[in-house]
Image 1 (tube, helix red, strand yellow):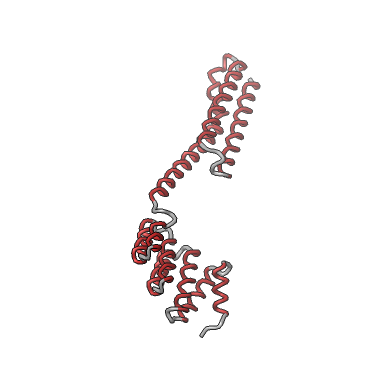
Image 2 (cartoon, rainbow, N blue to C red):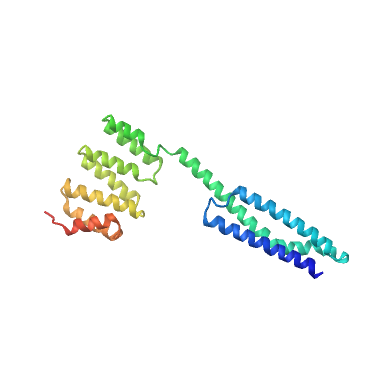
Length: 229
């Protein structure tokens, strides 16, 4: 009686350790353990469990064989539960990747090429409109607003450029990197082109406060330490 129980217990423990290792492997790198590996592990576990059950059945005392399913369930249940959780995680990850791929496919051209093409043809208003269209399509990405501001500044349209940067500050208050860049560039406009040095100083102070160790934070600190007319 002890031998078949030992066979089941050792097999169950070994399978559980294998599934734990697979789960950690998957967690360490999302591409390290995927659907194919999960299916292969499931198949291997079934083969091993089946073989061990045959051995246990051969060793199991005939009068107690009705208890074999219960013993096998107790031995293999932890590994089966762990594998089930792992497969759910893998499936969820694959589904999320597919959804992300679909969303990326539906996004406007990531390099803003249509707007840049219009700008190269000196259609500045058309390019700005296209940049804003990009932002309307993906309001989580501030890049079109910065691109529109840069283009407007190249053509001396500083008030409009400042409007783009104000939109960045308004739409990305929780994104420190985007907010700091928007505030830094807006401060430069206020200082150099719009005649509002006090507003520029305030914005530089805010950049230093929110991003003191970043490159922009250090540049803003340098501007504050410099000479102001």
